[in-house]
Image (cartoon, rainbow, N blue to C red; front, side):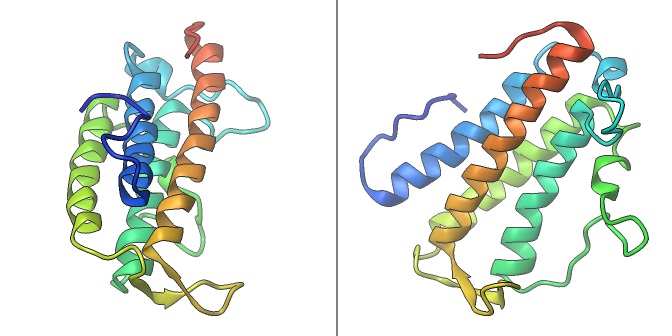
Length: 168
């Protein structure tokens, strides 16, 4: 996949999906060349969950939660538990970084197909907690662009701290 934020057309769907693909591809770009050892390091003393691997796992599971659990209404089979609500950050620490990225890419391809099959006004099967009503697919796409972009910023900081690599 080409990493670009310029859509082929300027309609709303193309813009939203292009930006989502761009932030997804940026996750991979931020991880390029990192060693498994550095990808599991938590360089911020007060943030033990902030690792390259943890962040990749987190964005993968964030998309899963929004698309499969909220939008489609499926049962939540994520790695988190009541006792460990942030488990998606830690359970993948022993998984090779390339495997985590490949799994994220494969999942993204499935969600790309899902999004292409639905209208942007499609309502989620589950209500948003605070809003008390379902979000549209449009809102979910906007939200995922924001969330993954924010975590790309975290990846920038963590990556620079673990091995000195600066992102663009």
